Image 1: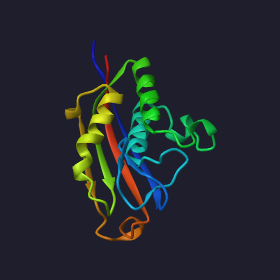
Image 2: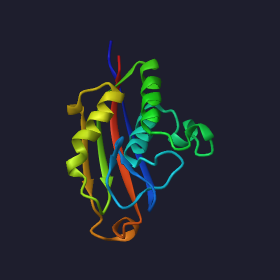
Image 3: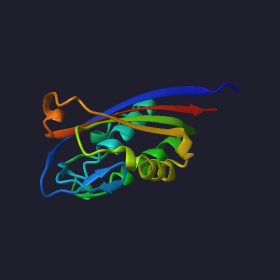
Length: 161
């Protein structure tokens, strides 16, 4: 029986504001600002969830976890990842790998990659070595460069036998 492969791409962006915790990849990172959103506004997990949903042909994060639903107010985006991975398993898909890019001027994120990978691997039920996380700045250009927000992209490969 031949395998079926699916690629998905996801994107997310949120504004940075004072008075919010900065949550990226399911972990809290010390910073003077946090991301504004209905949930924890974790752009890393939101981009990953969007990529998974894209590969499944199942819409987007707003369709499954609307920002006007009080059930999702302030929740950890790890809940979204767990739910979407369960959806993938029900459809007999397995996550092969994920490649995630965080776009932020600051703070320095490389010291946190391992912890982010650990959280994602746990919820996705895959090896940490199947997840790549990296960051880029915009060289102080645009709204990200001015420290007004952050964004993330994710690409995933799923397989089904």
